[in-house]
Length: 138
Image 1: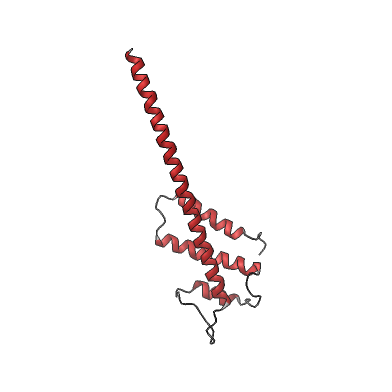
Image 2 (image 1 turned 120 degrees about the horizontal axis):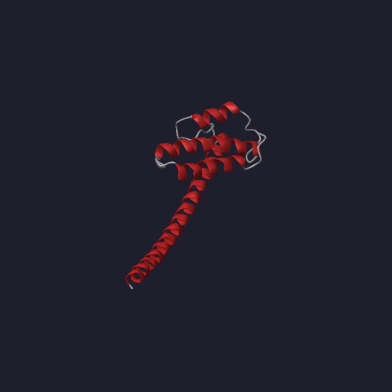
């Protein structure tokens, strides 16, 4: 509750980026599910404390039980209106998915730049190598 607004998003962002850059095992469905659950808990708390949704979402037990449940069906009250906890979790999940997309787009762009630089360097080295061979036989 004492963190700067947006710190939870930044922490999840850095954790995910670090995993993608350092872990050689990849980013499969099991890893994604663990990251997404963590992100939903952190981002939901951040959104709740930040006052994004209505103030009447004060029942910590309701939020915790909803976030830890394994079902994907949204909870609704007898009128069919979604609870604030569901809205928080959905919004947090969308923020995480947008974060994943942005990181993937940036990594793909960086990968393309790195490949182009490597090809340019390889071509330059080939040119130097052929000059060295020609000069050594002259």
